[in-house]
Image 1 (cartoon, rainbow, N blue to C red):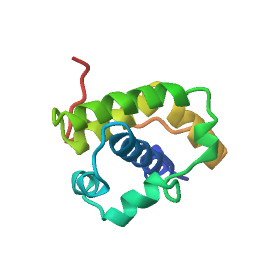
Image 2 (tube, one colour):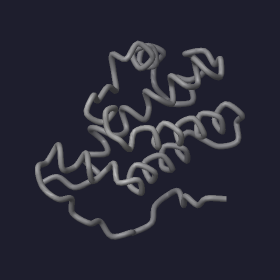
Image 3 (cartoon, rainbow, N blue to C red):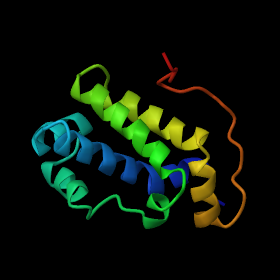
Length: 131
């Protein structure tokens, strides 16, 4: 049995990282090195995200909920480009978006083949609230 957090690590975070990195480089004009520093990864990892060699998930990209995720990605990238927030906060916010728009349940069903278990809301390092 997989818990939803495992699905996030394997299927959700890679595509979120890819899309945010791509947005920061292609839309906001940041260098791959700048994005790598923000993410705490190598320049090569960012290069792979940009070239779509890492972080791809065709099933997720074809989901009807994907445009909602991309809207949130654009907002997060803007905040990061403007240095208003930190990457950790934005990743947590995007994971929360994936959950609230029903995309996590959809991915879970596809990957695990059963209904997702419900995790208790136990808090965390970053409290994500809409302002």
